[in-house]
Image (cartoon, rainbow, N blue to C red; front, side, top):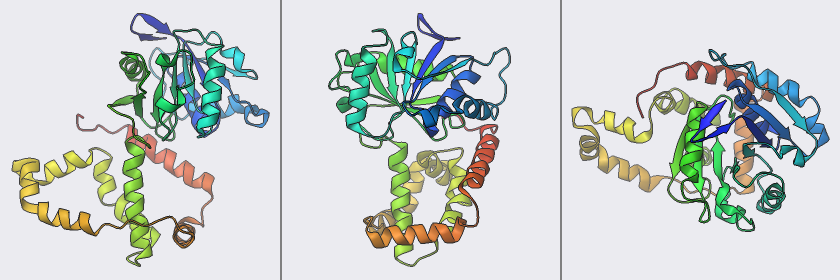
Length: 310
């Protein structure tokens, strides 16, 4: 049971049970919440409860918390009595707009709907709703049952205080929510990732290094710092006793020259082929499932480490 202001959220509706939706469901039940999970595809629903249980088993038990129940629904209207909806449908604006209209006819008027959309604008998704004030973005990082981040974004029609209420809820269940003050495509974390990927592709195309070595530069360099601090804090500490001001005074010129030299590659067929070939050369000897298992084990280890206050 999770307290959200004066309301009690006990039952979560998870719509869309692919990679993200199933992971969300696993996380919610480990927080003692009951979940009704719906996916329109029967092939996705088949064995879904077992997949959710397997992901939930990756998380440490919380003292005094009883694992919640999972109901795999075969109809959307089985979400009629949920207290909060986490929507994880395909990343298509038209489908989400239609889905939101369907949800409005089913769930109670006070129930919030948070979309896991990785880049769509909630202002557009809520534009055809009768009660758009309770729709917002609650974008997790993949996989949600292991990654703490949730990006909360309001649309123009989202009700006053809804973002704060969503942040309160996510924090109460152990997430690390952040609030975007305005809508931007891709939100924050995906834009930061896209910026790094763009430069990585540029370096590959320029023949600077292989995909594997560029990944290694990140993993054994900035990535180790970024696991515990963001870019601003990283360079604040790089300035020594003088902090970020001293860093800029000492290295602002070189940093500007690096910015000026950053690439702006397009995803041409040639660029795509170079990236695919590079990834295959670096990681093709391992199956995707094995790589995912390695990732998840590492994330669980990282999650146990103390981080600087942020």
